[in-house]
Image 1: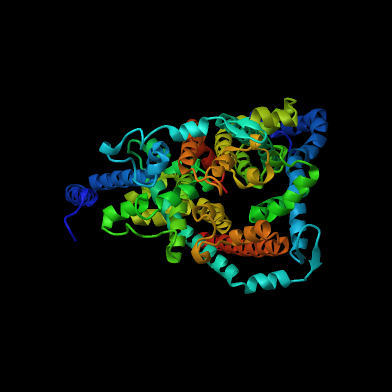
Image 2: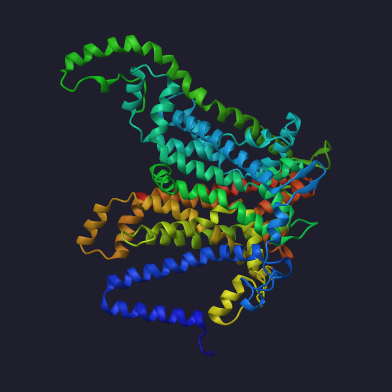
Length: 309
Length: 327
């Protein structure tokens, strides 16, 4: 082995520091090791993003030539530029007329937020019903829901395609919104969260003359707000990144969603990886904003939800 | 406990005697109870109606349809021939299906054996009392989940390129070789590449589940064990792990179900199924029959076989976890 390089030196120094700290105090060494491991893992997780940012600005000709950006003396308008973004954001002529990137952003935003909202309402209603009511068929329904989660979604794709086609919903957002409007998983999450709500509260609401729907709206929902945050995030991420469904059910170029369109850039006919990466970079922004704003509730929600059995 | 038609004892003043309570309750029930009794009966059905309806139309009916299809040979629209169990016997004898099943099981085992301990370890690191920038690390580790499977596949296809790919460069800097490793071209390296990509994608998500569970662990128990002189490993095994056992079961079962349904990630990573079908998964095999060859019968049979496998494995895991927690 030759003399160590920078990375190897860094690791050697870090290990030596750990051993030295271990001799001084075990607690310091533990804290030090924890910090080093976290920084290491954090770096590994973020490196692909760093790569993505660099690649989005690299010219198509040099995309595969450098790991990150080219060395300083080779950086110029020819190697690093905004061409990918210009191609992406520029208007594109299609059979159905001109479309541009923002149209797909709007489509995706609409589909993801509408889908999230609808499934939030229906899943929480179902979860409430299963958590707080006794009715005939409750037990079998819960068993059925749990079992239904083991069926791979792809199995149903072909028969569902036929149903959507027969309903005349091809190339409409109904085809995506209606079948996904409520999921067993969502109902299950909300059931687990609502079970913890005291029954006395619901009964008090009934005595005060609240309608059943109002009890759900004004008593239950505010109490499971953390779970609502967690559910919204999971649901939005799923819808925002969904590929198979939109790719199969949507046909006209104007109605497509971001993942499908971005995939076209690396499809059979065009191999524009740079444009694809630029689009991916922009497509991460909405979910990132959502995650940052829901972070605390996300963890709190899962604590109250899937956790307590 | 959760019977909503129970007498509303909560409204009775605590100071009231038992006689007074029994006298008051029936009256109240008569006045307000008649109103909500039928409502309470009907409401759960109304609340579950959307689920029941969509499930009937978009889950049960297609499932039935798929079941029927599994016993037919379909060649083009409307052309169906009953073939009995031939689809099943064909699939079970097909070396490609066995390869797909093997790859899928390999992936499932790898994600349980590597991903979950890693997620739990990271969650424990982030759950420590002090330590600044916890929010930052949490975001960093969760960040890959903001990108979908399709993107991760394509992104990693580029990160795995031999010469300038991030992955080989990193290996090269670290141990001095690996610059020419063809991750996606060498059949032996294809599944490891898929596992690495999925590790990057899912470690953060499972970590969040574990983190949520760890924050629920009763700290007084941990404190008591520490005072009794238990070392950290003992505390982990005897206090922490039993406390988070339900979540561990939940995560193990859901990740197993997810792993067995793996498709988009390897499909986009390899732009197909890899050299010599080395990255073929069961769902990939199914997709190939359903959408490329249009042989829906075979696809449906594969779907049922896969469902059977998933069901068996999940049930075994749930049984096992009950046995462990009973001991």
